[in-house]
Length: 198
Picture 1 (cartoon, rainbow, N blue to C red):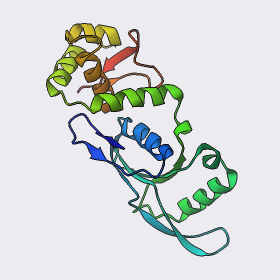
Picture 2 (picture 1 turned 120 degrees about the horizontal axis):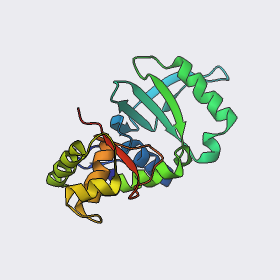
Picture 3 (picture 1 turned 90 degrees about the vertical axis):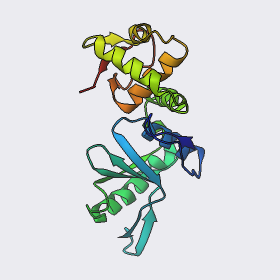
Picture 4 (picture 1 turned 90 degrees about the horizontal axis):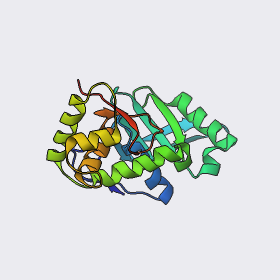
């Protein structure tokens, strides 16, 4: 799986053991609160529920803008919701040092709302391109539009075009958190947006 975690970052390649992992990584990467993640990075020892000493290798180590670290176990949906597995992960979490992670979580692609998954895909596709001039123009247009505006209003104000550069730049800026929207709103002409620029 290859993506950018930010519109100004280099393309990064992540190794995925399954389609499920690739889908979870795509949604993690599209979250504006995520600044970095690494796959298969963190190994934690623990005593399992049978009292045996063992360890686990987390699928994803995620760094958030707050400085918090989240360890993610990616499982297919049935196992991600299985009571016995969630109890096992909760047991591991109680033994995980705060120096290693602030919290742990079990995710499948279905942990993310369908609308959030669709937006994550659009952000991923927009980030595959590199167009800092378009990003700057759209961000300047957003800052000039006032407290709230529509997706189509932003594209029109940018003068970059609905289906091309303007759309992709807006998607990148939303993915990076410079422009805000409700996380379950799709990228439609009437979607309400706001500028988060300081």
